[in-house]
View 1 (cartoon, rainbow, N blue to C red):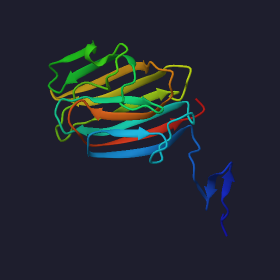
View 2: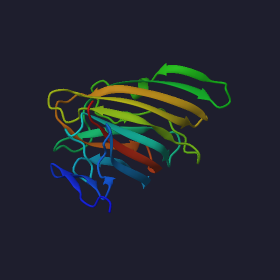
View 3: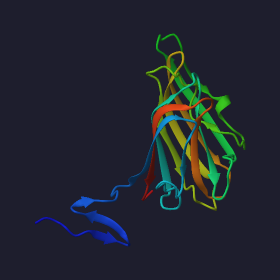
View 4: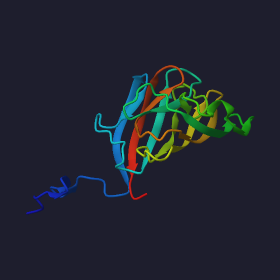
Amino acid sequence: GGLTMAFISNGTTMLDAGSFSVGLGSLTHIKTITASNDANVDFEHGTSSVVFDSTYPVYLFKFINVHPVTNNVTLQFQANGVGETGFNETITSTSFRSYHTEDDNHTGLEYQTGSDQANGTGYQNLHGGNSNANDSGACGDLFIFNPSSTTYVKHFLGMLSCTEQNPAADQAYIGGYFNTTTALDTMIFKFSSGNIDSGTFKLYGIKDS
């Protein structure tokens, strides 16, 4: 009794022993990396089961309780084009944040002049300075649109919540684009100084979008 045959479509096993083997919804999990005192975390297409090409028109990175070794540092990202190295793609970006201290003495909504780039090649900040207190970390999302395009620049949108050293709640919003028509195939994440003590980095592909 029961289903024993596998259902295979175009070489991909869809259903086997009664269980779905592929993501059926629009959001498909690709890869999870758990950091442990690492200098950086990178997702390279074709390496360690990472997919980051024309398979999906939109990719989503999720950051869960990313904790720095060093106090008051910023989570950042960069990319490599296909066949390129150095993580120095050209970026134009913008950033703003809101914040509120735990003691209720300070609040604000401000443009982040230290977190934007105008055709720069540095790492892009995802938020403000993050505390390295034991209970502190950064959580949020980063969308990359059509990274494999050879026609358009590669837009990104990020939203992260972190715990500042004050301590305070910091909500950061970034937007911009990699100003290149070369397809991107690798994304890298690191703190502005010091290692990533711990944290979960997840990559998803969004289809039908």
